[in-house]
Image (cartoon, rainbow, N blue to C red):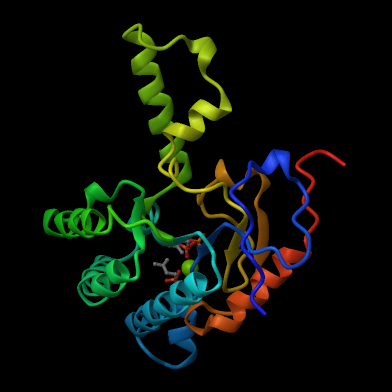
Length: 251
Ligand code: IPE
Ligand code: IPE
Ligand code: MG
């Protein structure tokens, strides 16, 4: 039986999740594509291709389970340190993914969102991404947020910069800067609070992903390499989440 989704409630008002509750917002650090390929004596690109298959599989499964928002870390602001050829391959896969999957996402009422400074990408890719987001903007269904050139420290620095500019212009009283105000300025401002953050591939770090938003998220590190992550693995993660006791500092 698929458990019912948690109601749209403020987390602090409803600290206990309890068994069988589906997280509203799941984020995934999709790691391990390169190691998946290496194990098979394949080029890293083959791992990234298999990673795209996993994106398709897992985002469909998340929708079927009633997860309201899924945020996927696809390219970090530090991934520019990779060889140009690999960056080019990743951009190529993103282009192909939009071409091949946008129709399905649009027809399934998915609302596509981007977090991160994706405007640093090639102009034609920026246009494709903007067009894809615009095509799903009037939808009302599940949210799929893709993190592109995303880094949490950069996101927070940008918020600080914008707020400082508003303060300097006399439009904002610094005393009014609160966690809620910052929340509303983040790239994730229209996503529900983060409930569950999963990282695949055995690494146990956040790699500059959703640092602010993860304040009270449940963290789950699994050894599975991202291309091997299945619908069942997502269901297991959701089940593990349902067994966590969330206290949010209370009792
Ligand atoms: C994650 O897989 C995909 C991206 C970061 C784009 P990796 O490419 O980091 O795979 P590993 O960590 O080398 O195995
Ligand atoms: C994090 O993975 C970024 C993405 C999954 C897009 P990395 O493979 O880049 O992280 P590190 O370098 O191992 O921390
Ligand atoms: Mg990696």
